[in-house]
Amino acid sequence: MEALTGVSIIIIIAIVLFLMVFFYFVPIGLYITAYFSGVKVKIFRDLIGMRLRKVSPQVIIRNLISATKAGIELDISLLEAHYLAGGNVTKVVNALISANKANLDLGFEKAAAIDLAGRDVLEAVKMSVNPKVIETPLVAAVAKDGIQLKAVARITVRTNLERLVGGAGEATILARVGEGIVSTIGSSNSHKEVLENPDSISKVVLSKGLDAGTAFEILSIDIADVDVGINIGAILQTDQAEADLKVARAKAEERRAAAVALEQEMTAEVARMRAKVVEAEAEIPRAIAEAFRKGNLGVIDYYNIKNIQADTEMRASIAKPEEDKDKNKNKDQE
Image 1 (cartoon, one colour):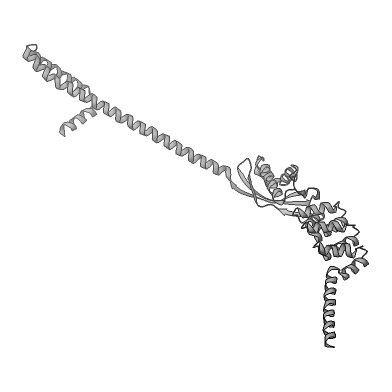
Image 2 (cartoon, one colour):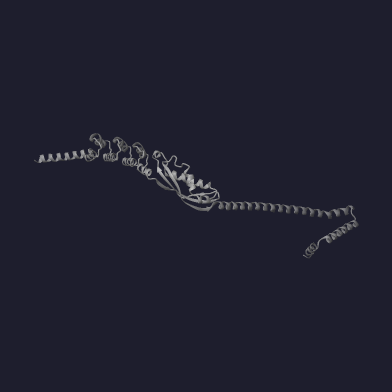
């Protein structure tokens, strides 16, 4: 009896292990759910094969049931291939269901490609049905009259499923719109024109086709706010005036230094001329003495010369103005 009991326990354990392995490889509950949902699944080829291929039967079968109930026919092998490629089968199937209900042209291959490209395919379909509004940061630009304007724009976009793979994202849209706002304000003759008609910015920017090469389609661009900034033109003119003033001061200083140098040079020249005159005057007594020694000049002649000099000085003194005479008197007193 004890031997039979031990064998029975072993048999029971073996049966339990067999059933555990069997139900692991053959999810009967999932098979029954698929059968009553109208999804044809084969136990050995599909369910057991998925386990052997390391594919989750729950993910594949449940998404296949959802697609079938939504009226979308999908090949189970395509779902397995996308799962093995690292894709999100649930998001792809939900995106297909949403696109089908919204009458969007989206096939499994395109949805799988979008998902494998790293895009959220379900979010893309939702944005295609319900457009999204993105707001630009504060964009500052200067009109031709030198007044700075600061604008904020709201861009309404929806996903372009055809260009979603390889298309640029929101950052490109924001950069292009910001550039368009700057160029439009910069080409305006006056900031008042922009303030009076801010929708002119959106019209010009929208006409440039900024959504080319992106994953989105721009539906509208609305200027949400326009504020007046600083007077850039006045600041630039002030800076230019200060720079011109510094240049003028530098040139004036250069001219003053040149005049001082010229004056010093003239003073030195006058000093040299006076030195020569003094030197020449110092030679006169020597010449007179030499003339006396050689007999070329007599005493009477010398006195005649002195009388002529005295007479000349007297005439010159009489011819001078009163002011010069007073100055001479003061000099004599000193």
